[in-house]
Length: 305
View (cartoon, rainbow, N blue to C red):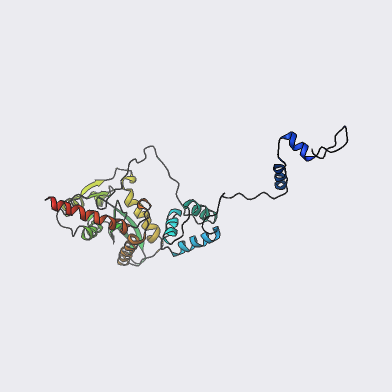
């Protein structure tokens, strides 16, 4: 428009006159002219890049993934491990970089039926509710083996593990005996009074001998609802982790070898697995933090008596 000639004087209008009539500054016009001749910038996150470049952070993320003894950890745990190692950055930035480089953990779509499980089964304190479950695997030398676990509903720790060639009610009691010996001083009468045991409706868990034994220890039986595995979700989730991190990626020749591997994995899990709900602390750290509180409560009760 500024280069067009006036019909009366045959002279160009000029840029200053056109901008004054359009009520636009010449700086704005020059800026738009400069952008018109440039390649459009690729879309990206606005603002500063944060501590370090994306390439540096990607290298640190890969190092964390390679150093971790667990597989399939999501971006939240990777972000937490970065913070523990001294690299402070935003969790969303870690997610973006992992997505761009195909490092995110695979996930299953969430399916909801007509009657989803409501409420919660986790507890605020350890040793209030334990969950137990059974799964199966195959040994190369002795065939099918049954795996039994017991898990705390607060810390998520494995309080006991066991493997056997049979799935009897007596084998199902073994991980509970291990937890009783470790945290209740033994499997004596009424030694676990106040502890609730969550389990499914498997024949070994509903057997008379199983129910009679846990009642002898002082446990309260709490079966999950029929056809609602969410009710035993803590133990079910622990079984899935056990499969993904051990049973599906390693081979065992005998049941005894599997039994030792379960014990080793449980110790490593309790010392290294991060629990997001508890501020990315390990099960051992969660229990250790609650032990002083339990000791203080016992002292107060003794003083009151």
